[in-house]
Image (cartoon, rainbow, N blue to C red; front, top):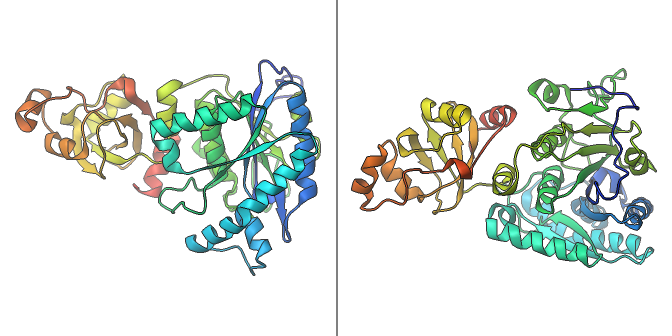
Length: 395
């Protein structure tokens, strides 16, 4: 963590350096007990229209479909089961898009609904098609309004919350800046709901275990994400070298204040880029196709020397995957080592696991390559992700 003064906080006012923005708006910002609050959407559209007038491009990642549907149907509480959430989202999604369309229409700006699921971005070809669609909409001057396709997604493949989806969308469109508009003012050193003396943290260079534990993880009644989800999203943004601003979404003018470098909210930014291109896509993947359990030596070689993965270091295969699919690699403790593209199918890897490369052809009758995963097609997980994955258990 790094605390900074107002004088040293960077400005994002240059529309050339920070031209493309992804702005995620949480359910708790847009909706109250009676559903979507049109005056809030109108005010946000006013602020985003000002950004566009300066020559910037804006993609909106909008929560609120389930909240809108819940209120419209007068349900006594937010649905808790997957079918009920899907049904509420089916009712609420057109209400949400209509509200954004009404808000931007006042500025002569068109919007487009874009619904995504985790498999859309886990498949490289679909990822690229989605990117081309979004880039075309931006070129036409349209504001894409992106949401998870809650009506068809199932628990095993969902993004979990739109904080993570917003990072994936920002990666998808090569955004210069990601903004999370939340119902909280900033990241605090302790949960302000239970510690009135909690202090805001203006700048974070690295998301680590201590920081994650200091943040409250309980979401509010309207949305599905808490501060924990925002920190995990921030870690992904930091890996991409992308500045992420966590701002109070219900505070008028917060976007402009941040644009000018004033100390509002929390800035996540190290200034360093870890991955790009295909490796960044791998690092950001929401749902790889399977898993490989490695021995300690192979896990260490991947982490410390940047080696390729050979069959000798593989102990077990989980899931079904084809040649070219992305898979997770786990160490003997179940911690995530990283994600890579395989040169062999699950059935083939199961046959050659534990073998020396010289024995591959004898076992299979052919050999695609010596490596199960080449180092050029492998992205390491961070230490925090490794611990998080071990705590959750493998998928």
